[in-house]
Amino acid sequence: MSNHTKTILFKHSSKKSPLSGGVWKLVIELVIAIGAILMLLPVVFIFITAFKPDSEIIHFYSILPRHWTLENFREILENPAEVPIFRWFGNSVFISFMVTALILLVDSLSAYALARLNLPGKRIVFALIIATLMVPGQVLLVPVYLILNWLHWLDTPLALIIPAGAGAFGVFLLHQFFLGIPRELEDAAAIDGCSRFGIYRHIVLPLSKPALATLGIFVFIGSWNDFLGPLVFLDSVDKYTLPVGIALFQTSYAAEFGLTFAACVIATLPVLIVFMIFQKHIIKGISLTGLKE
Amino acid sequence: MNNRKLLYSLSGYLFVLPYLTLFGIFLVLPLFYGLGLSFFRWELASLVPPKFVGLHNYSEALTSPYFLKALWATFRFVVMAVPLTVGSALVVAVWINTVPLKRQYYYRAAYFLPVMISISVAGLLWRWFYNSEFGLFNAYLSLIGLKVPWITDVRLAMKSIVLMTIWWTMGGAMVILLAGLQQIPDHYYEAASIDGANARQRFFYITLPLLRPVLLFVIVMNIIGSFQVFGQTWMITRGGPELSTRVLVQYIYETAFTHYRMGYASAMSWLLFLVIMIFSIIQFRILREKQ
Image 1 (cartoon, each protein chain N blue to C red):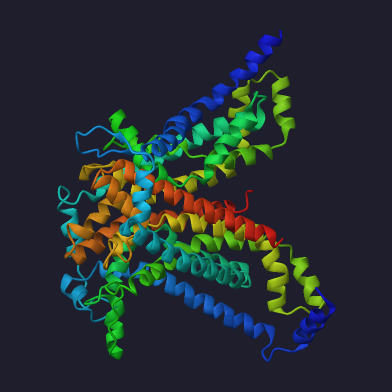
Image 2 (cartoon, one colour; image 1 turned 180 degrees about the vertical axis):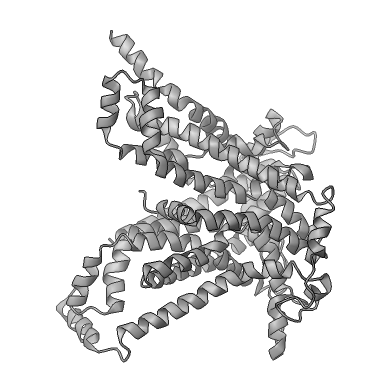
């Protein structure tokens, strides 16, 4: 920085702001609070609108319903054959759990070996895995579809579970975390005759709970909200996951606004409850992904 | 003895084997399979066997008005969505960071909440907001005599998609940036304040330089994600009006799974991959150079 610009900077900074720091802080917080309300309002609308009769949704009078009704929910719950929303919910829970379990298992095993064991050529293997971090999912869509077709896995949960285990992100994240665990503990265990798997199971895994939780949350949310995968790989309505099932309301029940919002509530409520309970962990998990480099 | 040692070392690969199997079958194989496919004409629904056509699929894409239109729509989305999403996330993160920790916790959760909403729910909701006849936005705008063609006007539709995207994704970028901000040691700011730096100077000379690695990560991830935009446009506009919001992934999806042109779809997805790579490299270069 030249002397000239320096003087300009300090001249500028010496000007006292007309408002004191405290007032500015209050104004900023007020703006943040209004913004927070605006972010939440759309979600609140889903819940309120689900209790409106169709006529009030089509002719908008007020945010709150004039006549509160449970009709929309009744209609959905009474037609499990037509709108198998709980089936979709179960499918989503099953698939997301399996994906998370699979990824935590295979990624932690391989990350442990690549970070800790004396494997010949492991640097090359790790570099190869990391290189695929840049590959966008859509490039794999068509060939994976053809491979799944050949395996006869299309339209089964396997199509969404097994290929998800191939991603490199978890291996990378856990590898970096394992490198940070002090070696002394493992060395001591090895001297006591603990096998490599024993060290992984009884020392590395328990010490890595925060990293495993971060990865688990990240993977679970990703799988739960995956849209393109189930859209392409699933065919039968009763095998759908929640996102593609709910998307049917855009076409099959396009005119049924009340029904649509009731379905959205059923799909969103469990997510909101889980979010409220694990909020701290979820946000921490997501925010850590940017810092681990 | 040495042989046994080597064997023992190699047996460590058993730990890596489960992952490498999946990695091989569902990442490396499809990557090259897809690249190979892109040089073939292959209609899955027809009985005509796949035929090698060289670079024909690529030249067809690059001269097809539909492909170029989808590419253009994707560009428009990226150019609007990335700066607005990351920019607003940065502002919100910096401001939330000035709020006392106890309340910060609630604000952070509020801004993050939309990220948790599934795209189909979010899409259906905003489609209703944007509906020109009985949508929420126009119901209120009609009170002042306005009727905005949110998703029915060719010039406006993509902007409406971007607005919804900011709401839906900004929280994710925000919490990452906020975590980055909180890693900057307080005494940097204290020292700067003693030297007489005002809030703006502190932001440009302390916050931004120290936040650069995290910011770079957020921007690159956002660009990669935005080039693959699909859910929002699929749910809200289905690519309309007049294909003005039909983005590349939707076009690839339709080419592959409605028209079953697997080779052509593969070629287009490799072109998109190429575009994403070029942009990521440029980003890294620009942000690295400034250091």
